[in-house]
Amino acid sequence: MTKTVTLSHPTGILKGRVQLPASKSEANRALIIAALAGGKSELQNLSEANDTQLLQRLLNSDSDTIDAEDAGTVMRFLTAYYAVTGQQKTLTGTDRMCQRPIKVLVEALQELGAGIAYLGEEGYPPLQISGFKGSGKKHLKVRSDISSQYISALIMVAPLLPDGLELELDGKISSRPYIEMTLALMKHFGVEASFEGNTITVPHQKYQPATFAVESDWSAASYWYSMVALAKEADVTLLGLREDSHQGDKAIVDIMRRLGVHTEFKQEGVRLTKKHAEKRVTFDFSNCPDLAQTIVALCAALGIAVEMTGLESLRIKETDRIQALQIEVLSMGASLEERTPGIFQMNPTLLTNRELNFRTYEDHRMAMAFVPIALLQPIQIQEPHVVRKSYPRFWEDLEKMGFEVTANE
Image 1 (cartoon, one colour):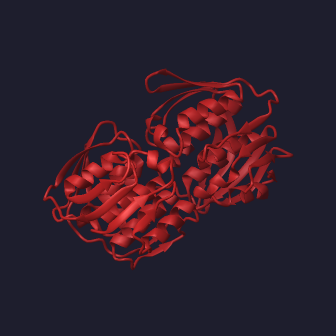
Image 2 (cartoon, one colour; image 1 turned 90 degrees about the horizontal axis):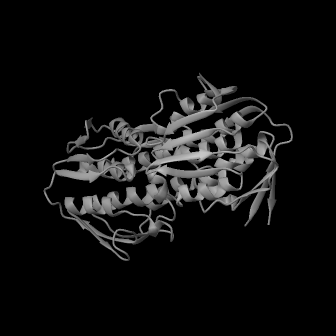
Image 3 (cartoon, helix red, strand yellow; image 1 turned 30 degrees about the horizontal axis):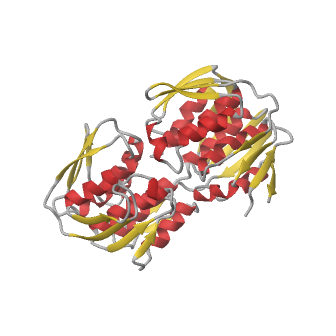
């Protein structure tokens, strides 16, 4: 397996079209809902991301032991799916997955009548799921400041509950657009629900099979936005993105407007060109935490100071992303500090031909976030295979756009 790749771009000029991977956020929700609808739906443009291919395989598996590997949505969505459909399963994952908390979701399902036991440390996978008896409980109160995936997992299975579900969200709502995406997909498959104030109400009803086409991935688009911001010249079209997208990471359009990228929506996708960038910016990532790494790396490279909030969920992702960013920006002469609780400041210094060799911490977004810096100088990325989680064709797409990508054993 390739240990590192060396990246450079001989001209710094980006021109062309990129066929982005499909959204794994949409695809994974659609797969769960389609299964709950009886498995007769037609899902088009399913993501080639490992997380989506994995979920598709596991939903068709008869095995008693289910390995969710390093996929957070797979672990959380299947926990609710197996529990409420009354299946007997052992659900496990990688070492890192077994360090990622799941207690909020498990306790909610237990309150509803699911049989779930921890096989290791309480509050973490692996889990033993042993059927569903139904508690008759309809109203639940759950924390909403940790992961929106807990909320999405619960509301997707809620129509199957005998009395439906009233879910009261306690605290600041993390990644709200992803909850709204889940509700939109549920509606597409025939389920009506309401989200008023901090309460989501899902009556008992049946999903209807449907045809659904998955949109291209706005998270993947963010890396190309960053490349356009750092390029000498750029005219890049990203195919398959929609202006009326349900994806929270469409926020990249407004964020990058301040960081030097103009977006023009076309029928085929979006056209990106360069514009003036601001020198100091403030962003709240509460609704789009997966964009934070891209923005930190970009601002460090551009020499733009950035203040950030809404990063709480980054501690429990594929790695502790805040700590990983703090380490990696140091190699660029920048610093990322938590000035007061929840408020982070990234102070850059201009790049001065430092040798840059970025670690990825088994995290696909760490790899892709730092790649755009290769437009300024040669860099190395460790463990490049991690991109398979969400964007398996990433290195090939870079080469098509003029990057020189050299694998090192």
